[in-house]
Length: 395
Ligand code: FEO
Image (spheres, rainbow, N blue to C red):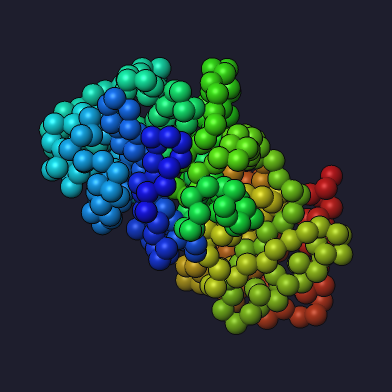
């Protein structure tokens, strides 16, 4: 059902309650998502973004309930990723003469997705299009989330349509932040930031500084996923600024996997050491935990302790995706240490420490290894390992 944001501006997107894996299978969406598209009725009519391809007809039906769809003059494609541009092919079959507005990078990325010679108009940062009473103003936002990403701002209504930025994967009956559970919203927003935007944190800071200097009034921030920020809309901008600085809460995350629980016992004993020193921690066996959720906890924390037994001269495979993400997400200000059991070759600690180096996680202390099952004395050493890690963390 279409929802009015302000007079003549409508949400015409789709709520996807059941999606549980996004980006192929890369990102877990425990609370579903939405694909937000916005219809603006002025002397000219514009649609800002579309929806994921399988939902094209739903988008078209939503628009038809408000206007004759053939009256659309402009389709703004803020970003080529198919969760937002996927509705273009079906839509453009109905309105082949409409102008598709793209950023300079979007000119290539949209074309290379659909290979259609639509009537493209390329805009750069600061360009505007008059709709009659109000204008659309475009702001390039490279890497939030792709090089082609841009924001579209509607003058007169003071609505910033920020595409991926300031969004979250969250399906809800209410469209606005004053209609939903904000604890859930912020859990999803920080997860989204962690897993998608962390590597671009410096750009986030620069973009927010740049935007604040423009001194543009913002009544509503309307991202392309999740809720629309209507009540105190700049709260999410302030949150992004805070997240982009990558401050942490001083806690520790213990990430491990185990075969016959030798490394599991070590993890438990290490956590006892942290507890004795009053350091908050969370313990995750990667055989059962969701990678994106654990990464979100890593984002909030200061210390990362990673444990694995040695298997086939390597680490347990369940740990490899998160180690790859730690490298790719480029978290800042993290310290770590490695642990694990082994039977004969015992490369585990060395391999984990090599991963720390690649992820620019500072090794806080030498790793600890136990051959076969740990004795009581060896577990006491693990407790001490946790205590010394906690002390070093605080110093
Ligand atoms: Fe929601 Fe980068 O697409």
